[in-house]
Image 1 (spheres, rainbow, N blue to C red):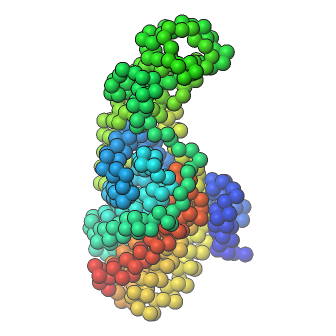
Image 2: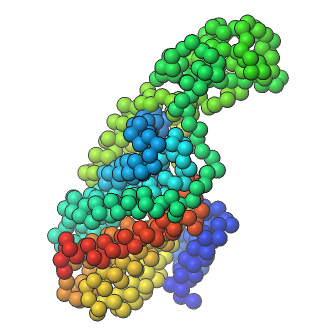
Image 3: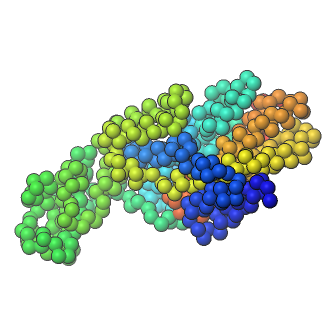
Length: 513
């Protein structure tokens, strides 16, 4: 069995394992490069090269930037703005959220936009009483459409622009990107509720937007909400644990703790508010202090709601918000201008978030979705094997030979089918690199202009909707949305048809043969 046949076998086995969903996706992604190495298709260095690829480092750094935006309260602020505008309307929720991710994608690319807005999307779903699974996948798919609004939307755009004899302008892609974005939003609004599961993910962050109001009502406090929770001070609800040394200590509302950092606002036992009393196991106290004091002063008690989670959700634009936004703006500028490679811009931004104390090192590590990082790194080996073994070229040459003599639009259709098929299984950037030279060769043989052919490939490469492994963005929403492998194609298929219509019928309207 030659290398191309082995690659096809590994590819098929990986798809089956993903669909069956009996093994964690990260384990499948690790087994793929190991299998390609064991069968001699790739050297060990090439098989494992994906884990050190700049794209993987870029994705990891974007998770850190996203975590910093959430920790600084930027995510909560954006969420509040959107909630205020969408109200209870599902249509406004989808239009505003998907429109925002599409515009942001045009500036910083798909992965960065999705990583930044996933926490916002979850927050919006919780606050409007909807399942995150109804919003997460549309978020990723709208980002794919938004990637065609500007040159900086995806690396594929840059590759295609370099391949075109006269290049493409910065906003040339918007001629197809705008109708694709509008069409994507329309399909989600009209059919998304029926095509998407209503499923709760394994873990979902509670909504603390009304936390101050809840505590004031529960403890009958005479405090305005802004005095209870603000940028400087917060509150923590704590329980005296069994066998605690605090049992027997005298406390009363209004007292200052021995450390001098926290104030006791209320004491409860069995659902009743108490005055001065000796603490017993199971008593509940409401404590107030600076956020820093709350972080370090609660080691001896059980905390009902994590202080950090309350601070992030209940206090928009917190202490580090200006620094986080400044770092984000610089990263966007570096990505938009191409002053440095994307991985460098991402790593600089992630490092700046830690140096400027928006995040601690521990928070940055916790913010990275390691499943996504491992999955992307492992599946890159399959892209390399498809190219190195000649498997991808065999597929491409065979398809182009079948449709190439039927006319320009049939060529566009053939290229769309090929690119879309490969794009569901390997990265869209690798797919574009495989198909572009074949598309240019076919255009030259048929005597047609290369621009419509290249733009059709660009649209086709963005149509990666049917599997979670098609793009990192698809993977990023898998856990927050509680999705399974088979959930993607139901909404993805009508969107794939939309992109196919644009690639075959609309592209030649703007770029003639």
